[in-house]
Length: 131
Image 1 (tube, rainbow, N blue to C red):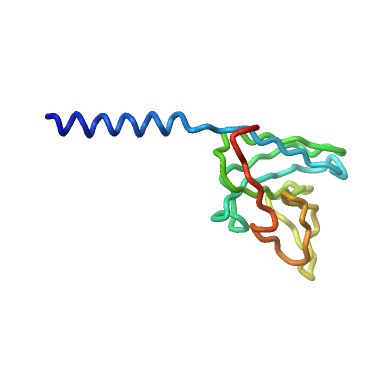
Image 2 (spheres, helix red, strand yellow):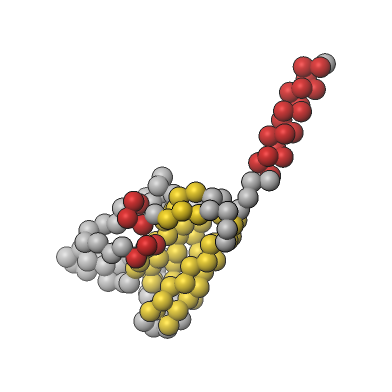
C-alpha cells in the first residue's frame, strides 16, 4: 500500500509541475502589407515542423493594407521560427510562377531573406519567460 501511495504521489507531483510550466504570449506585427486582398496566414514552427506543413500553432487574419498584428498565446519557452504568407486569393497555399518563384508575398522571423528556401537556423528566435 505504501508503494502505491508513493507512486500516486509522484504522479501528482508530475502533473502539478506540468501545470505550472510557464507560457508567454508572442505578438507578431507584419508590416508593409500591400493591400486588403485575402488573408495573412502565420505559423509558429519548431525545427521539427519548419517547412513541413502546419506549424505547432497556425493563425489567420484578414489582410489589411499597412500592418497586421497576430498573437500566439500560451507559447512555452524554446526555439521557434515564424513563417507568414499573404494569401491574396484565399486558396490556403502559396502560389508559384512557372519558374518556381512565389507569386504571393511571404516572410519569416528574423527577416533573413535569402535566395532559395529558408532554413530553420536562418529564421529561429528564442522565446524566454517574458511576453
